[in-house]
Amino acid sequence: MSSHVIKVTGIPEELLILLDRRIQDQHSTGRAEYIRELIRRDLFGNSGNVLPINRSPNREEINSKEWRKALRQWIASLPKRKTPPLSDEAVRRENMYRYRG
Image (cartoon, rainbow, N blue to C red):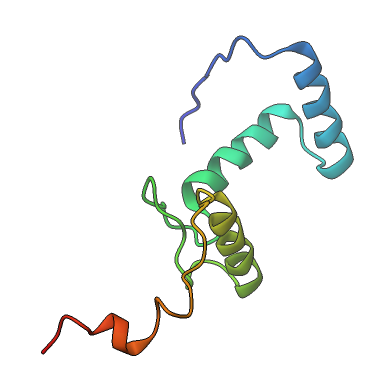
């Protein structure tokens, strides 16, 4: 596999310090290897297959705990509605079908 260099600028020093602390505390790799692993996981997920862009992994690609977490995150990301709930009168069968013969 060939090696390529990607130069990233504009990252504040305090962010790099936090990144280095996380790598030191949770991983035995250096900064470059950690970032390579993040890119690999973003592209391949846990399955080893390239994930399509703008698509969440399907149920076969992740375990049930990850699936529940992803579902909860998706639900939390939906816009909050300020619509009041329907009244009992509004959901009565007679009112739903009143325009049908």
